[in-house]
Length: 190
Image (cartoon, rainbow, N blue to C red):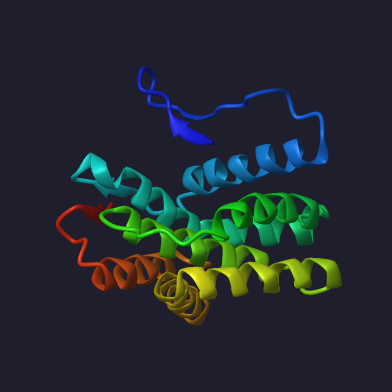
């Protein structure tokens, strides 16, 4: 997880343990990618006016950057993302078997998380076992959380149409999500 150290104002990466597995190395490299994008001024700063929306801001940031970072790690540095993605997907699917009523700010978070997963996991198009798991995930989402799944798919589709490479692209994605959920009073960018 990346964060800004409250005492120094310096971007930090917090590791639960030293990266000893390939998944650990991927997670550290992924988070370092966020820091590098920020240092290189390739990243928008999302400002929360209401602390209840800190997670929402983080999920929007993930939509704007995670696919770019993972694509770069895969293509430039030969990271193999399949194993990590399947682990995450397997854990997520454990909770999709039950349908619960989602309200409040969680009603905004879930489509954003789903969109981020769709964008990242769509990078893997050459592994049949992964595709089967991905299809199973999408089916469970549609069966148990249809409107959330549809909203996430809409967000992912719009983000793909806009693109991710520039700050202007990110601003367009941000504006699309802000307008979709009428969040202009609680989130802004600098």
